[in-house]
Each structure stands twice: as structure tokens, then as C-alpha cells.
Length: 92
Image 1 (cartoon, rainbow, N blue to C red):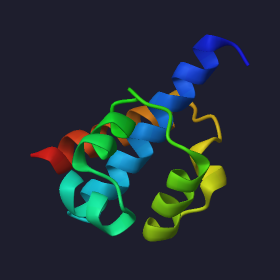
Image 2 (image 1 turned 90 degrees about the vertical axis):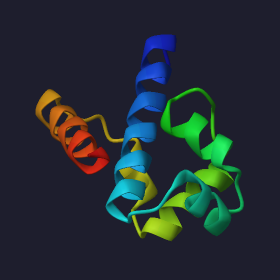
Image 3 (image 1 turned 180 degrees about the vertical axis):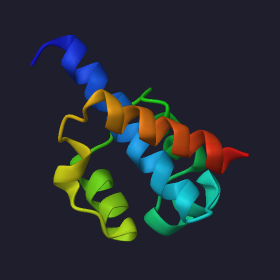
Image 4 (image 1 turned 45 degrees about the vertical axis):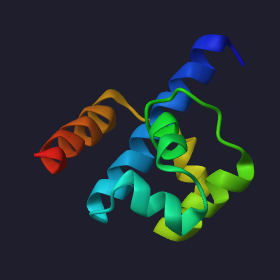
């Protein structure tokens, strides 16, 4: 897989996790407590600054009750824009 594809996936995974966290009205600290990560680790995943382990991704998906495959299905531009818009609206 090309480096660009890996970076794209890291960004997509981070956005999906961020969206789910905001929808659940959790801080990074609160999510970290629930899945045994630090708030800094949660933030780095959301900002696509780290490569979470499979174990970490499974914990996150289990907590939010989302299928892990949904993290890796390439989104079209409209889906991406929708996620970004919802994140912005939830951050207000």
C-alpha cells in the first residue's frame, strides 16, 4: 500500500473515532479511561499522528459498537465532507 494511502487511512480512522467520541459527548480523557489509553494517545489517534494497534482499534470499535471494517472502507468525497461538517458542528 502506498504511503499516501496509509496516511489517508490514518486520517479517516482518526476522524471516525473523533466523530464517535464527540457524538458520545466524551472527552479524550474519558474515552481513554474506558479503553485504557491516555488522553494524549486518543488525541494522537484522532489527529492521525500515530498508528494504533489492532488491539486498540478493536477496543475503540467495541466501545462505540461499530464494525471495525467501517474504519477502513474508503469514503467518497461527500461522506468525508459530511463527517468533517458533523465534527465541526459537534465541537461548537
